[in-house]
Image 1 (tube, rainbow, N blue to C red):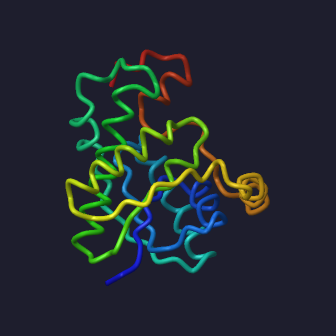
Image 2: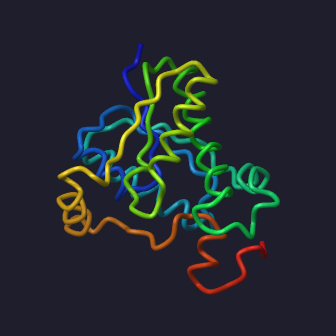
Length: 183
């Protein structure tokens, strides 16, 4: 049995999680990231960091329609609301299923590294999908560790791309002052 599958949303969060002690194979599944150029940029940065830390990466095909289908009707939700919960569940369920199918003992996510995300909600969703799928979820809160500031300095020193929105088109539009419900 393989040890651990770590769902990774972006390179800066992978650095934080790694410095906090997270290990395992990297699972990059993020159909929420929009547009595709942004997705590719984040994926390349994750690959760069994984290589630096000698981590194996499991890439999953980019599938934004899966995200749009999952959050249909939630387009106007506020950031951090029900749409985000659905997005977390979509990604963590896919990671849980991959962990089970590929023979990993457990899985977790770097989503809890972001100070803009509700780590209690993320860990609750992780526990829920893990129990439904029949795998172990390891809850975490990477942003509260003593290495958080060290990770931020390392990200800057290495010139790792740091995005300015969560990834989805709705958060991008809110950040730029547009109507988030338009696709």
